[in-house]
Length: 152
Image (cartoon, rainbow, N blue to C red; front, side, top):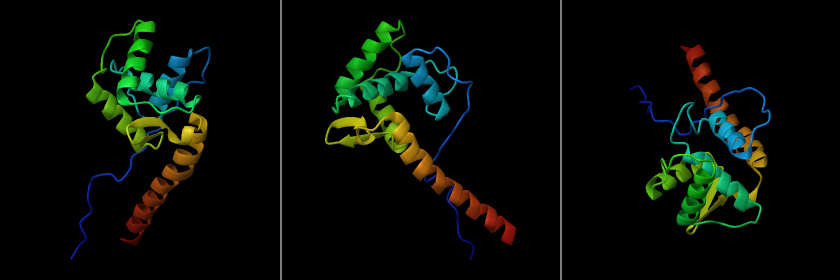
């Protein structure tokens, strides 16, 4: 009897390469990071994930966790300061975006608070969690499928 392979991914990683960063403000830099990591699609008008990540980066320096409501308030303030529409600022969407950041191991949740993983820098999180942990697991599994193909 053939083994049934499920089509739902255990983990997912989308990586994109953009031009080198040049004279970008902090928010635009975080936006390019979100685009590069597949957290955002080019042309998305609902880019609240950029503001959420920016809030968590800023509070990580202070080693503080934030509740969803606090993240929402700070993200709205960033959007207002940048003259951006108030799209995607509902608490339910903030939670959904935080879940996406947690799935990529960028953000941790403890009790009711959220923070960057272990209060590390984003570059350290990328190196240790994505490049060092998630990517090798995905590559290993792809190689297993390629080897299985070679057997048949």
